[in-house]
Length: 310
Ligand SMILES: Cc1cc2nc3c(=O)[nH]c(=O)nc-3n(C[C@H](O)[C@H](O)[C@H](O)COP(=O)(O)OP(=O)(O)OC[C@H]3O[C@@H](n4cnc5c(N)ncnc54)[C@H](O)[C@@H]3O)c2cc1C
Image (cartoon, rainbow, N blue to C red; front, side, top):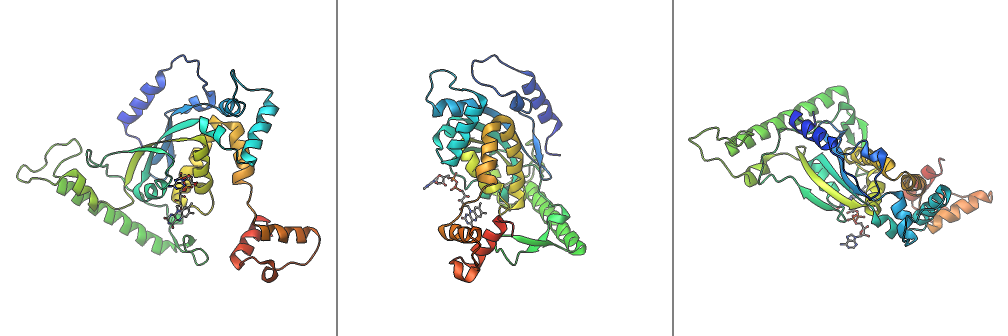
């Protein structure tokens, strides 16, 4: 379970509070504010705070004194125009803050996104929970032969079970030894008075990468879209993609017009090289085209055919 009963109570208490403000609020996002959206076996993502809405993007683009919004169709057209032409700074006017609980190996990929503000749970200061990620059997797969950075077919059931057993045993053993080295229980009480116990900042090095960490992660809408376009993509590792997908759900609640433009021009769209464009022009003109004469590598050709659904 990703959330302990006392944490649930804190979230419920936070959700009881509300305050009057002149600033923009978004009812659909307020509905899930603070509420964890479950991801993987023990992880979650929850929105802690946000600033701005679709109107704030429009307002900034028009450098307006008042609300800056016009008719819905005009605002929508403007947001689509900004997205299409990569006029990105109006999107930087909105900010969002998440609380994320994620396995350490996912955090290592996530932290590469430098344009965010991050504060991570301190395992120098606190004891990490005994929670580690175990993939569902269908996500245990062989190394991909076509993509060196990916996975292929699922493992046969017998092998998957053996892998799961190893992952569980190794993680359980490393946590048991972590606890032994600390010589403290989760409440910070000494377990064995006759032993000293190792500092938390050192004992943590024994934990494997599938243990969960947590952080607050704040970014602006422009950089959030960059993160989501890379991590919700089919090429991203499944374990980070599921976080990006949960965050897209929050994006759709928060800024529905921007989310629609994002789906249209970034997630659902495609970028074409000059050679790829020349191939499409030839196809449209009914001229014969093949990979060898196209100037595209085999991989680029197959990616283009995939984009074109051929
Ligand atoms: C499928 C996939 C595979 C990957 N594989 C690898 C890998 O094998 N090895 C690896 O190391 N990484 C890998 N990465 C990480 C990737 O190279 C990026 O570091 C990561 O996606 C962050 O992207 P970003 O720089 O656009 O994001 P951010 O750090 O948020 O930056 C956003 C934008 O700000 C600008 N920016 C930020 N900081 C700087 C800077 N210091 N200098 C110049 N411009 C800056 C850039 O325009 C950048 O696009 C992979 C990522 C993906 C999605």
